Image 1 (cartoon, rainbow, N blue to C red):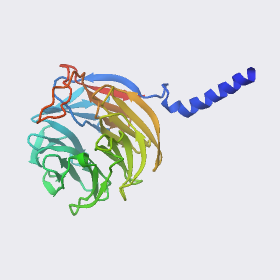
Image 2: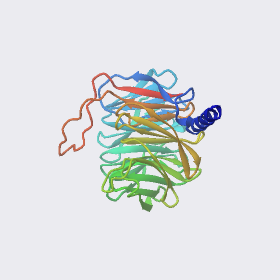
Image 3: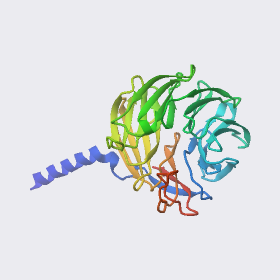
Image 4: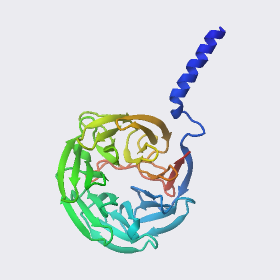
Length: 354
């Protein structure tokens, strides 16, 4: 009996060791707090500037700027309509917001948050990133199916590229003259030469990765991390797909929850974060064991609708905009997939950390 008990204890200890990274504990990620933000308009992609300790929260007709340390409001960037995302070029003291007002990118002063200029880039710009080597802001327009480059110093358009059919989604830069862009509705991935402004490769991610949405990159190992919403004719699963950026092949997969809309990679810790707002809401965290091997660290329960996020790479804290949600309105021809209505006075930022 004593030997059997010892054996059972040893097996249990081994299982706990193997699964330890997924068990609640002192080092587990958890929801720390919820920062309320006034206003009942929608939201999109938030952005954390770790160096300046600021969190940019696009919120309807404005971007609310929070202090990353205290969570207090620093100021606002106003005069927008349906703001989507933010990118910053700190060496020039400029920030950029893309918005459907209609189809513009607004350049603002990082210190004062005052608007400097505004340029039209299409009908409905969505994803936006900064390439610090090329000194260019890139934005992808869903309405006009166009990639636009903006000089981060002057705010002037430096070039553009019209794209084939498909709904543009997230984009990522390798820092070597290439931008990768998901075409969500057709399951394709473009590799773009953003110095010659041309498509150099187009890869089909189907049937494994349906509705490729969010994306980030490990430039050192030439790996793309793509959040795939799944579904479609093949009824593909909702996964995090790891794609070799040299040939477009999927080299690894991990299951995630429904409704992914943001993926971020922390190269210093080798961690990938994927936020999914479907169901109860989940933040999935994976470890990069090698460029082609990944393991689950933890699934953190968040809230329904917590689909986008920003990562503070200095602290490892994750920020997710969210609101209490009611039932979705009835579908219409103009809006076949309406989002649930938010309860008044509940918009906030969920803070997840250790």
